[in-house]
Image (cartoon, rainbow, N blue to C red):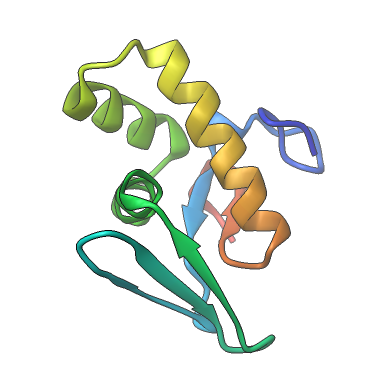
Length: 105
Protein backbone atom coordinates (compact mmCIF):
# COMPACT_ATOMS: atom_id res chain seq x y z
CA UNK A 1 0.00 0.00 0.00
CA UNK A 2 1.53 3.30 -1.04
CA UNK A 3 0.63 6.61 0.52
CA UNK A 4 -1.99 7.20 -2.17
CA UNK A 5 -3.42 3.80 -3.07
CA UNK A 6 -5.18 1.00 -1.26
CA UNK A 7 -3.78 -2.56 -1.32
CA UNK A 8 -6.03 -3.44 -4.26
CA UNK A 9 -4.92 -0.38 -6.23
CA UNK A 10 -7.93 1.86 -5.54
CA UNK A 11 -6.98 5.48 -4.98
CA UNK A 12 -6.92 6.38 -1.31
CA UNK A 13 -8.40 9.83 -1.91
CA UNK A 14 -11.74 8.45 -3.08
CA UNK A 15 -11.88 5.91 -0.25
CA UNK A 16 -13.56 6.29 3.11
CA UNK A 17 -11.64 5.95 6.36
CA UNK A 18 -13.72 4.63 9.24
CA UNK A 19 -12.95 3.87 12.84
CA UNK A 20 -13.74 0.21 13.53
CA UNK A 21 -15.81 -0.82 16.55
CA UNK A 22 -12.72 -2.17 18.32
CA UNK A 23 -11.09 1.28 18.38
CA UNK A 24 -12.00 4.12 20.71
CA UNK A 25 -10.43 7.53 21.12
CA UNK A 26 -10.63 10.52 23.37
CA UNK A 27 -9.40 14.02 22.59
CA UNK A 28 -7.64 16.04 25.26
CA UNK A 29 -6.12 19.51 25.05
CA UNK A 30 -2.61 18.41 24.11
CA UNK A 31 -3.19 14.97 22.59
CA UNK A 32 -5.72 12.43 21.43
CA UNK A 33 -5.44 8.95 22.90
CA UNK A 34 -6.51 6.07 20.65
CA UNK A 35 -7.03 2.58 22.07
CA UNK A 36 -7.20 -0.57 20.00
CA UNK A 37 -9.34 -2.85 22.17
CA UNK A 38 -8.20 -5.95 20.25
CA UNK A 39 -4.51 -5.42 20.95
CA UNK A 40 -4.78 -3.38 24.15
CA UNK A 41 -2.36 -0.85 22.68
CA UNK A 42 -2.70 2.87 23.25
CA UNK A 43 -1.54 5.36 20.65
CA UNK A 44 -1.02 9.07 21.23
CA UNK A 45 -1.73 11.65 18.55
CA UNK A 46 -0.68 15.28 18.67
CA UNK A 47 -3.47 17.89 18.32
CA UNK A 48 -3.13 17.97 14.52
CA UNK A 49 -3.33 14.17 14.28
CA UNK A 50 -6.33 14.17 16.58
CA UNK A 51 -8.07 16.74 14.40
CA UNK A 52 -7.28 14.74 11.25
CA UNK A 53 -8.85 11.66 12.86
CA UNK A 54 -12.01 13.61 13.78
CA UNK A 55 -12.37 15.01 10.26
CA UNK A 56 -11.68 11.63 8.62
CA UNK A 57 -14.44 10.12 10.75
CA UNK A 58 -16.88 12.87 9.72
CA UNK A 59 -16.18 13.05 5.98
CA UNK A 60 -17.38 10.59 3.33
CA UNK A 61 -13.98 10.35 1.65
CA UNK A 62 -10.33 11.00 2.36
CA UNK A 63 -10.46 13.70 -0.33
CA UNK A 64 -13.29 15.42 1.56
CA UNK A 65 -11.18 15.38 4.71
CA UNK A 66 -8.25 16.87 2.79
CA UNK A 67 -10.43 19.73 1.50
CA UNK A 68 -11.85 20.45 4.95
CA UNK A 69 -8.46 20.40 6.64
CA UNK A 70 -6.79 22.51 3.95
CA UNK A 71 -9.46 25.15 4.42
CA UNK A 72 -9.37 24.95 8.23
CA UNK A 73 -5.58 25.26 8.45
CA UNK A 74 -5.22 27.58 5.42
CA UNK A 75 -2.64 25.24 3.90
CA UNK A 76 -2.12 24.16 0.26
CA UNK A 77 -4.30 21.14 -0.57
CA UNK A 78 -1.36 19.16 -2.00
CA UNK A 79 0.56 19.53 1.27
CA UNK A 80 -2.45 18.48 3.34
CA UNK A 81 -3.16 15.61 0.93
CA UNK A 82 0.32 14.18 1.43
CA UNK A 83 0.06 14.45 5.21
CA UNK A 84 -3.45 12.97 5.42
CA UNK A 85 -2.59 10.06 3.10
CA UNK A 86 0.52 9.19 5.12
CA UNK A 87 -1.53 9.49 8.32
CA UNK A 88 -4.20 7.14 6.93
CA UNK A 89 -1.64 4.53 5.90
CA UNK A 90 -0.04 4.68 9.36
CA UNK A 91 -3.38 4.29 11.16
CA UNK A 92 -4.45 1.52 8.77
CA UNK A 93 -1.25 -0.44 9.39
CA UNK A 94 -1.83 -0.16 13.15
CA UNK A 95 -5.43 -1.39 12.81
CA UNK A 96 -6.86 1.93 13.98
CA UNK A 97 -8.90 2.67 10.86
CA UNK A 98 -10.53 0.67 8.10
CA UNK A 99 -10.33 1.96 4.56
CA UNK A 100 -12.96 1.08 2.01
CA UNK A 101 -13.00 2.06 -1.67
CA UNK A 102 -15.64 4.64 -2.51
CA UNK A 103 -17.04 4.52 1.01
CA UNK A 104 -18.07 0.85 0.80
CA UNK A 105 -17.16 -1.90 3.23
